[in-house]
Amino acid sequence: METPWHLYAMAVLYLVAGLAHFIFPKIYLRIMPRYLPYPKFLVFLSGVAEMILGLGLCFQVTRNLSAFGIIAMLIVFLTVHFYMLSGKKEAAGIPKWILVLRIPLQFVLMYWAYVYISA
Image (cartoon, rainbow, N blue to C red; front, side, top):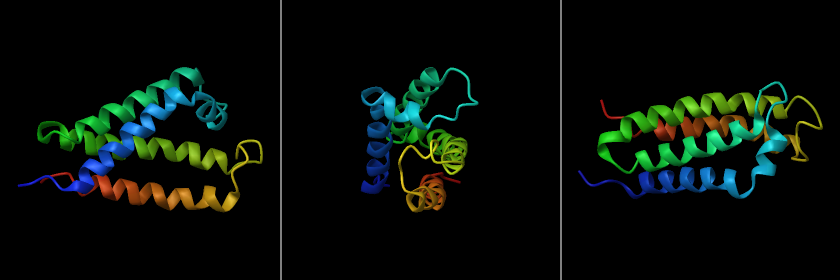
């Protein structure tokens, strides 16, 4: 079976998003919940995770594990999205309507990953 182009699009999305954690760490540090320890480490760790999981989507042998990993990662990232809704400072200057729209977007991204899990 031929690998669909949209699987590679998702892989590139996570590779680029993960790389952005290293290029623009201050953006991610601003939105990191204050109650989590070692915020800089967590920003870099999440960037590495996104890149590894994105790359893993490109290979049949790691695709299921990567898709499950992406779903788990997006569930964890929901905590950041809810944290950003908790106050003006936490929102980091992003309009509330965008922050609210990001929550259902997480579920769309989870479903997109789920589509590539083979039975």
